[in-house]
Length: 373
Length: 230
Image (cartoon, rainbow over all chains, first blue to last red; front, side, top):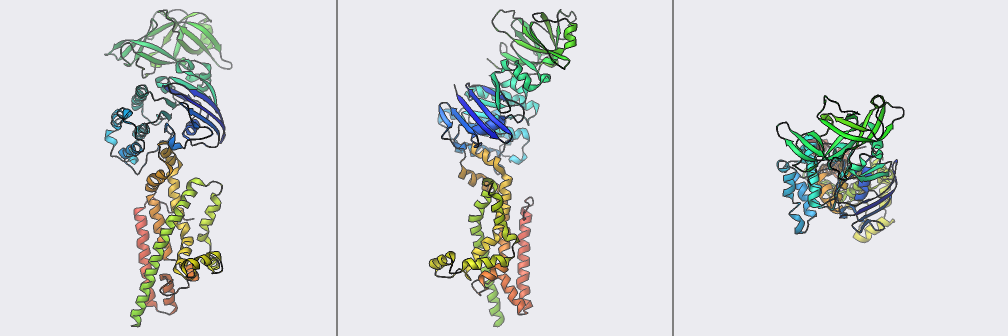
C-alpha cells in the first residue's frame, strides 16, 4: 500500500498554508475545499514548484522533499494541472511519445499501461495526427491525461481535471479513472468542486479550508458530517447511500437496489447484478412523514429513525439525520441527511427517535458511476 | 577606371556590412538568448534594472554610446589592452570593435522579441515539462526553442536589418576606414558629401529594397507575432 505523508507550512500570497496529512491508501483521495483554500498549491508543492514554504514530503519511505529535495523532474508524481498544457509544436501522438521516450519503464509494467491501452481506453485514435491547437477542451484533456499516465508515475495528482468536459464524456472518464486506479493500484489525489464527482469516484476525502485540514476520512462518512456541510453550504447538503443491485429493468431503464432489505429504485442501469452501487440523495429533495402515505407520490419509500434534529437559527430550515432501518440485521448503518422547513417539522410533529417514512422523488437521485465489487 | 574603382569600393562596403550583420547576429544568439530567457523566467527583483540597461541603446543618441565605446576601447583600458594582447591590433577602428559596438547597439532588438516570445510560452509550459520528467536543458532545447521559433525569426530579422542600417556608432567606433570598417551607410554618406548622387542612389535604393524585403518576409511569415519595441 502506498504511503505518502506531507507537511507544508508557510505563506504564499494571501494564503497561510499549514497542512499535514498522511495519505495511506491505494484508492482515490479527494481534496475538497473552497476556492483559495490551498488545494492547487498542495499539488504544486508536491510537484516541487513551491519553494518558499517549509515542506516535508515522504513517499513510501523515501524523502522526496526534506533537507534534501528531488528536483521536479525526478519526483514520482504524475501531475495534471488545472489548465493543462500540450506542447503545441508537437502532434498529439508526438506529445505522448515525447514523454514516453523520457520515462521508459521496465518491461514488466510496460505492457499494462501501454500507449495502445490508453489510446484505446481514452479514444484517442482519431486525434493522434492532429495538432493540439485544433482540439476541443475535452479532447485536450484526454490527451493530457494519457500523457500524464505515460510518465508512469507512482501517484497521480489531478487538479480539477473534469471542469472542461461535457457530461457525456465526464461519466466515461470517471469510470476510466476508477478502473485505472483499481487495475494498476496507482493512488490518485483528485481536486474537485463537484459533489457528483466526489460520490462517484472518491474513496477517501480530505477537507481543507484557509490552508488547514478540517477533516478527513472515507467519502461516505465525511459527506454526512457537519464539517462537510459547513463547506458546501446547506443547500448542497447530501448523503451517500450504498445498495446492492437486485434488478435491472431493461425496458424502463430502471434499477432496483437493495439497502439492507429496503428497496430503492433509481434511473439508469448502473453496475451488474449484486454490484454495490452508490447513490447520492440531496437533503432538500427528501420528504418526511410520521405515517405512511397511502397514495404513493414517488416510487421510493424508505423507513428510518430520526437520530438528530438541528433547527437552524435565522433560517426557515431544520436538518435531520435519519438512520435507515436495517431489515437484514447486519451491522451496516446507513444515514440520510434531510433538510425540511421547521414549519413542516412542527406541523408533522416529528421528534427525535421517531420512526419516519422517507419519500424521494426519482429526480433527486443522481445517476452515479458504480463501484463493481 | 575611376567609376570601376568606386563600384569595387562600394562592393567591399556591402561585403563588410553583410559580414558585420551576420557575425553580430551570431554573437547575439549566444548572448541575447540566455539574457531573454533570464528576463522572461528567472529574474524578479533585478528584472527592471536589467531591462533598463538592455533597452538603453534604443533611447540614447548613437553618439553617446559611440563616445563611451571609444573611451572603453582605448588601448589604455583593460579591454583595449587585452584585445591588443590577443590580436596585436587595436580594438578601436577594427572590425571586431564594430562587432562589439553592434552587439551592444542591437541587443534590445534581439532580446525584446525573444523575451516576449518566451513569456508567451509561459512558466506553466516549463512546469508541465518538468512534471513530466523532462530536465531543464532538455526542456529548453526541445520545448522552449521549438515553441519560440517565431521569436527567434523576428529577433534575427530585426537585429540583422538594424545592424545593416547603423551609422552613428559605426562611424565613431570604426572611423569608416575603407576595406575595414566602412559600411554601406557610411559609403552613402561619403557619396552624398562628394555630391555623387548617382552612386548614392544605387546604394540607398539597394538598402531600401533590401530592408523592405526583409521586413515584408518578417510580417508575411509572422502575422501573429507582435514586434514589441519599446
